[in-house]
Length: 267
Ligand code: DGL
Image: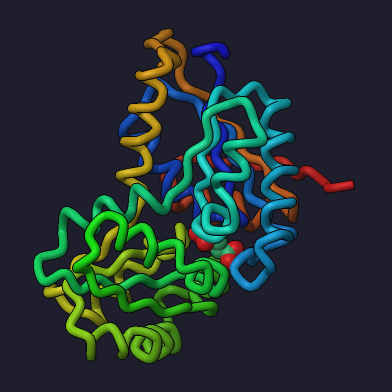
């Protein structure tokens, strides 16, 4: 594997860009090749077997783009089968669930942790199991929030309707007196404003992006695959399976840099 190769990052849409943004901050030398499977988004309501077959197809595509590791920057795809991808492919592959769980374990004081995610992630119970492996005394309160991904993809985060939807979804969390909320979907950090407005300052929002980037850095260091300062600016590449323009618009705002996206049409 070549240290100058890129890091492959995948998601169903723009959500994984929250992880990409953190990679740019923590690993400024690295290049990424991003894949947003926007034509088949959302993954959340799909059966796990179907999501796994999509992820395999994307990883095979990313392999053609010379990547040295893969970040499954999608909770639904991680929950659907990270161990399968790790067993089937030769390159290092990490997901976003374990990193978020570790961060929650560090932050919670009252051991009452909320988890929000897509239907696929919540029904997989991947967060419950990982939190209990870390600390069996943690009480986990989880809630699927299927509308959030569509709200983010359609740039509706700031609307009064979104506030009402968030109040509805988060009521059980408030009643259960959580002190930390894991944003168990990479799209959700883009709703942090409305989520903190509903939950107030007593609840810490935990996004796995920061911790996932730390893990990526550690994996590259251990495998001696870090890209060393070449002097050349890191050039990132973005691929989508749907129309590139909406992705480029949201992505450009989110990353505060121009995003040029190319469409890959699945056979
Ligand atoms: N951003 C994704 C996640 O982290 C998936 C959203 C979806 O496609 O349903 O779960």
